[in-house]
Image (cartoon, rainbow over all chains, first blue to last red; front, side, top):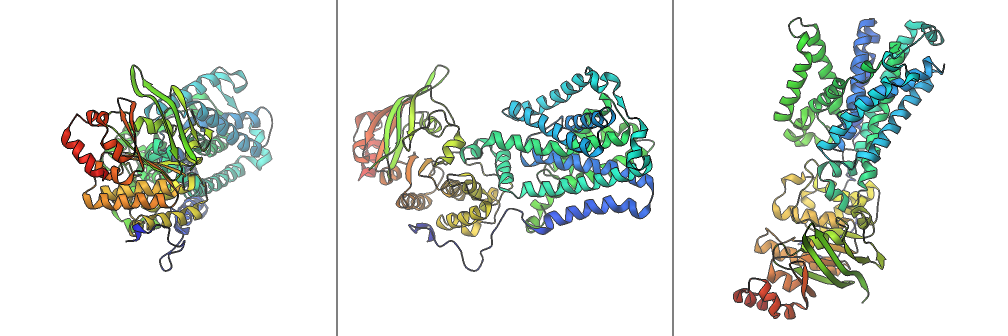
Length: 342
Length: 251
């Protein structure tokens, strides 16, 4: 029996050896990326503004869900207040453009940095908390930031800020600006998918998965858990911050209730759970599926008023019956798919 | 032989309960040290103090001549100590190989994923789990899960390995295999402390044995000395039959 050998066998087992890095397969990034690009470029084919606006909402959801998945799916920490990064990025970006006269590019950068910085501060402060306590605190942080901004005069207090439309002239006028910001979002969604894949298949990501499954065991195995969790949180916050800056630049106005709606956080969680937490594919499919369902509900005259109720019921059903989500269920049902379905 | 680990007057309290009371011992390089005692004697708590899961209220721990008291578990792990858990909780969605890669990648030799994959395959071969490398860890049976836990610890290439009841729940054939494995690990130059309830096995495999009872070290010596020690027999319920079995194990 090989197990009784006193020393290790040679490094390479001749025939069947392949470097097995968890989930590293071109299909695992190329196919979700292709889906995002296909969704993103579809309005180009139809040329209709209404399709572009629908897809803007959908891709925003993709970025939120894919980013949230880094902390929720990979690391196993439920961030209930994730919209705080979207809102803060939105405010910082909006302030720079509307009040300070900076460019959109600077606003996007600053929005991402502000969100990342907030996540880092929250991370070192509260990632010592586990499970439900962390989830509760993230809701508190969202409400606290919202309350702060409602009383923060440079950001317009409870009334918020509005953009002078002449700002858009620098970007080819409002019409061109709407096109341009849309394609920026397509690029951001593509980046989110690539980031998600890179994290999932890296050593850092392996450490996150270990934390998700058993944090005490991960510590004992040498995973520096406070640092890993904090960086996971920062990575999950940056792109929502950038998208916030982009969204409110396009929107032309910002106010606290629009920037920090708690239901957006919860919808993002539903999307991640629907598609499959902890996978690259899952949040992309979950966001697309959820937005399709939402569009159906909102346009149905009987169901439009109970749209959020349906989301809540959906979350309940997923947690009860397919906690692994669509992709997780497929991976378990068809183990052969695991290599190419991440 | 040089001293690898020194435990000096370590005390750990939980409220009014003294779980580990003024325990001191030394561990030499290349040794297999058995740690026995009745349930609730404080064996696992002592492990937790050594590898940084708990910080002892009193005393200090020197590992590789460095005072590691109060270090975090991940710092201790990266400094060359690995440990298996009594209750095996494998990560549900990872394969056996990926599990072992966690140990390799984040352990004492902190390495990249490719190298970790190679080390994982070597260790799985060594522990007879090579055919299971691509299985989901959740699908293993108890004996295999114990081996997986051991593989994870071994892949971190530690100098000191703490084994917490690796034999519990195994059948006699599996115990014999595991004992051979533990000896083989020691032959590779890794020092071992093992907590065990399976008496004949621990008597057979250990160079030296410590006995804990109510958090206190009540005996220390070779397996033979321990089996003949009246305090130890008393600690184990004063059962003369058990004493007899201990004697046989010591032979």
